[in-house]
Amino acid sequence: MTVFNTSNINININKSVLDNGIRIITERMPHIRSVSIGAWIAVGSGNETPDNNGISHFLEHMLFKGTKKRTAKEIAQNLESLGGGLNASTGKELSLYHAHVLDEHVEIAVDVLTDILQNSKLSGRELELEKNVILAEINHAKEDPEEFLLDHFYRNLFHQHPLGYFIYGTPENVGAFQRKDLKDYLDSQYLPERTVFAAAGNIEHQRFVDLVTKFYDQKKQTPSSQTSPVQSMQKIDFSRMEMDSIQQGHICMGVQTFGFTDERKYTLVLLDLLLGGGMSSRLFQNIREKYGFAYNVYSFSDIMANTGVFGVYLACADDKVKKSLQLVKNEFDRLKNEPVTDAELSLVKSQVRGNIILGLESSSRRMRKIGENEIYSGRHNSLETVLEKINQITPTDIMRLANELFQESSFCTTLLTPGKK
Image (cartoon, rainbow, N blue to C red; front, top):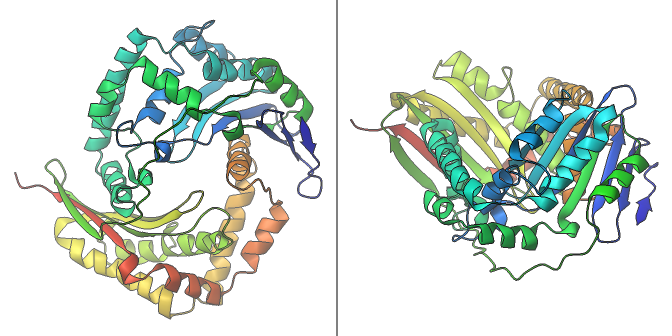
């Protein structure tokens, strides 16, 4: 096991690497009584193929359906009975299994997390039942216009690339999955070198390392061969769909950006807040407050390993779709051609600073921060370093990034409008 001295980064962050490649990272928060624990696996729908799309999400569900020593109900009760919680999520590139418990219950939390990762039975009966649950989840997403639109926006932006696949998969794939499919995927993808155990809260680093090594099998795994998915990065510039059940038009337009280690991500944080990050943002003040076209309007940024997404979403009356699109484009052009005022930039910098500092009060947000940082870069900047990077950004930096991103040829626009009855 290798132990890294991180005192020059942040006195409360420590990292160890086990002999088989598993990374363990902690951030100590001695002033609270809870601990958030996460088992991060660098695998998601972006690792899939057309034939197994949805298997990462399906596997996440199935790992909670019983192990060799716990039933599904016991998995749920073990932490809930202590006032804690256990949950999981699947993304484009990451799967996360996480728990939040009192500091005195860390051992049982690590025991349960490692148990579901290593000893899940993936029983055929539970698998067939869970297919119905996931099909219901897929149908729910289809009935939610915002989620439905965003899913298709990603599909259009990353056309024929795994990052564009729906995380839930297709009904056809879900219905066809068998135990062997899940077991093979688990063995080939959930590998030590892709695994990070992260904890934030009132926890000593060495104690967490000892617990992970106590409960997690330390033998090395050999990945099975996997078919490489198509790596095309083309996009669909414009797409329009209809939904009978909606009354409004829904718009999502955006561009591909850059990966996690790109230093421009700090400028993008400010640009995001400036454009659509709250009630004081330009989109909100213009499209909602000035024109009254939309109730819900915002921008968003999604940074992944080697690429990213920046986009704008809004919902408006069907006859206001064209005008709303033009208003959004006007704001993009304004960012490209007019320097942000010092007062406006100072305001969003203060907003970022407040968001970051308030986030430090949450053990869950800290666990997610150090887990993602470790997966994507292996670097952990101090609060002072991050704030200094933000503080150094100038109006010229904002304008330069806007000109790099907001090119007409780069945009992907996806519309969802009311269907014709």
